[in-house]
Image 1 (cartoon, rainbow, N blue to C red):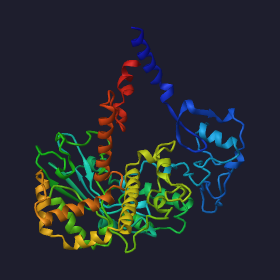
Image 2: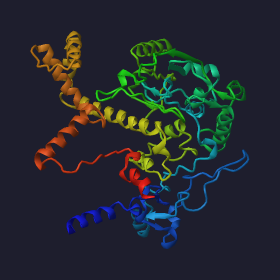
Image 3: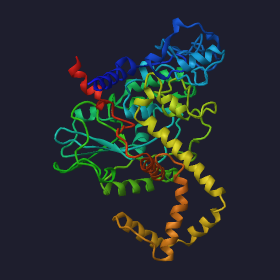
Image 4: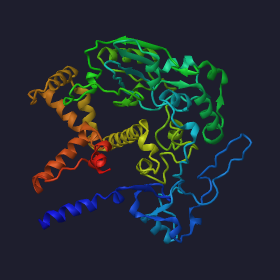
Length: 487
């Protein structure tokens, strides 16, 4: 009985709300357990070491206002504590490596850049990361919008914003799939809603405060061509049977139960299923439309990108993300790619106001950026290895008919053992190319390596008694499920 009481008491102490609450550190801006924070008023530190010219920018309200830094030390707004690591570093007389003063300051998000719809964000961004055919299904009170991104998020750069309605229609296709025609209420719920005044206010603010929007020309003619509140492009409607699910066959797993996705009320959901390589970057419009049509005929959706001839570089381009996500980097500061910080993405995802966590596209595109660079590094290492010449020679000798046959048989779940020299050549080549995938986190090869590590650990240590979900859904947290009964 005493042991049981000790275990339960220890559990209650470990999950005490005071130990789980998080707040932001004023120095580094990172979410930190509240118990590990010390109030700024209770510490005596030299705050002058956090002063750094050119890192911040004071908000301007008029074109004649001077461009100035925020006076004083660089600290996060609405944060009144300092974490243990920052306090220890500052007591030694040095600014913390991950302090906001070390080119990690992003600034507060102004009212003009908050609560923008997907289409409104597309119209104010200087670099666009996608164009889409959105599939919204309404039936039995549910709607769903899913997208597949099949081009890298490097797109055409506009010097005049917003683009005209015709330009929007060239890069944006909007398709409703539903038993009935969409209503005005359906349009309001979609991510394609555009409000002209919101766009004007956002662009006016960015021109005054964002470092990359100084030379921007705001076209009132283009702005007036947009609807006061509506969809800025043509809308097609494709009827579907009422008893059919709105799930895309190509986007579902083998464990999917077939339930419809969507919500009965509130904004319509919008999700990205995947991103592929840069080879589509210079494809003409006819090619993109052909690929989109083929994908739609298979029951899927298409998200294409109309790009300029020169793609934006992912390397040493600190301003790429501030131009692509101005609502997250309102002053053009703190972008990814600064050579001073190799883990900027991790720091941004733990930012105290959670703007980068809650934005749907930013984490996915930023992680894909890392995957592309990791794949390039793996390819470079493979090209530098002594086996590269042999890989190229085998690649030139490979029989495409054999590859097609193997792909078909593997897709059907058949276990194949190579019987011919051509089949063995294909498997050898796959093993060589798998080396590249091992450098890319999230790839099938990386998952296989991790699975082998887990099984090896289980074989050595034995099966675990406790199983922990590494990335649980917040609303399924046991504390949250028990909260109504604890009030």
